[in-house]
Amino acid sequence: MPVTKRKNYLYSIALPLFGRRCRWKHVNVDGAGNPGTKKAVEHIFKKHHVTGGCVQLIRGGQAAELYYAGNAALRPRRSVRPDTVFRTASIAKAVCALLVMRLQTIGKLSVEEDVSAFWHEKIRNPHHPGVPIPLGSLLSHSSGFRDTPKYFRSFREDITADELLRDGESYLETLPFECFLYSNFGAGLIASLLEARFQVSIEELIQRELFQPLGVEATFDILKTDINRVASGYRVLPPERKAAFDAAQRRETAEPVGAPDPQRHFLLASGNLFITAGEMAKLCLLVIHDGVYKEQKFIGDASLQNLRTPTGGGAERWPGMRHGMGLFALEDESVSPRKLHGHQGFAYGAVNGFFFDDGGNGFVSFNNGASEMRVGRLSCLNRDLIRAILP
Image 1 (cartoon, rainbow, N blue to C red):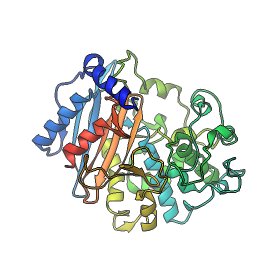
Image 2: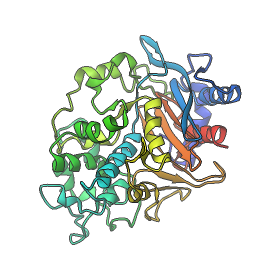
Image 3: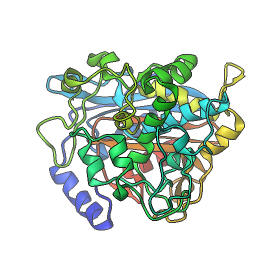
């Protein structure tokens, strides 16, 4: 993904010339859509070379129409539909944060707890051996954990959580909450910590405590999905011949997530959630409605405050987008005149995101391939959608 001004500039030149072309003509609407919004979504999707995607609107605190277009798979070709399931990438982190806040609300944990209290041995940053690492610092990417080459090798090698935790390279020299550094390992470790405490898999825990009570259809286990509904992922630049994420192939080689495996399941919570845009909107609405579901307080006020409030870590490269314990706070008048909350997800060519304001207006956008250009940490695709849908 381009992350510097120079790389973004080169990407912007190459995309119109060499980027994968859209193999679809029009955006479809499920519900009473607005012609102006439909035209805007269609323009943005084509501008960013979206392979296939959905945009679920939220208006006035309610799910509204859904716009969808393109292909969920290219070979054989399969169209995106309203019920297409997407791999969310890092949006899974925000969903895991909701689980943590639910568990905190019912008194089963606290974001202030030392992560060592969850694990079978003490976890300490070797640069600060006497300082506890709070669970909340993992949620806000200010724990001091960082992603190392060994972490990335764990995708294909049998490297355990203990090996990474005992590796001094896994830690910055900073104190908890002192410095923001986005860490897939730190966020994914939350699943391992929860499995160690509750002795069930992250899949069973999140189904029992979050998805089933809210009536949400989602899973970390691709074996539980209808593979004919799951989108594969494609990079649009360079336009590779094979899918970057082949859903059917992944399902064939996947192992069930039925049993807890704290030493390996840190790879799940960082990006392996499967859900539709409409179902993800239900989770957004829970936060929009201040944690209330069916007139019951499902997530408490203190937990909502943790979720939404930026937590320091003044070293963020782009101050317009700061991180709480699960959600970004976007405050940039060049993008939106109002403060927004949300999260993004990038993997295998997908550029996902959800954003909403305090008035209950927002959207969930999932796709399986699009332009990966960014301004700061905000994708250009999500920036354009915010400007069009949340002016």
